[in-house]
Length: 200
Image (tube, rainbow, N blue to C red; front, side):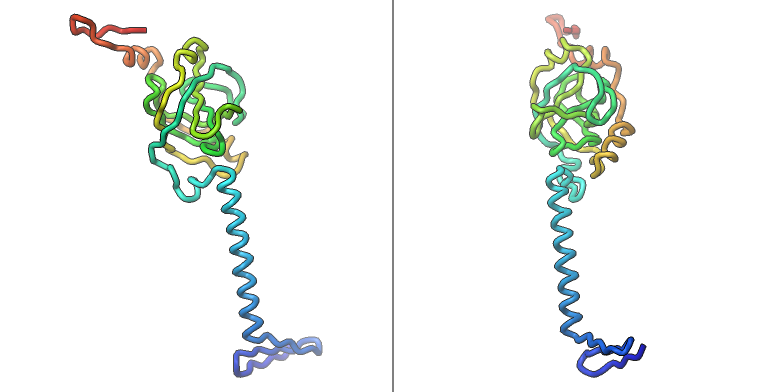
């Protein structure tokens, strides 16, 4: 291979009896094409992330911030969307476009059911900023009703479905006190004598 560098930014090389000329204009056009391709790829990935509801995972949106949600409760036990089994005090259902499977959250203003949860399930009626807390007792789930709560993300979910299921199964959350203690502490009210009385 023979090549010679000429003035004016022109680069020529000869191989197999043919001469190739790579001018400065050609190189600029190649760089422009590469940049345009990278920008298109970035935009497509960004749109996919936004569509899948992982924007906060990329930019930190909502991470650590308290956000208002409406919480209800359900008592249907069994396998969740994350292929785990429902577990009181841990299992939470949410809209995957808002809180994807595998997200670890903390809930406030849910009474004795406040605390940390893992998003393991979804539901047709759980759309937007809504949550469904799993409570084993159907009576208690009905008593829970509909509450305005605050939620913050402690650990975002991974981007892929397989990693999300693994995260949901292996996520660590701070254990809640025994249920009897939580209920007892929540339903303590002073009576006429000034002493606290437990109301169930």
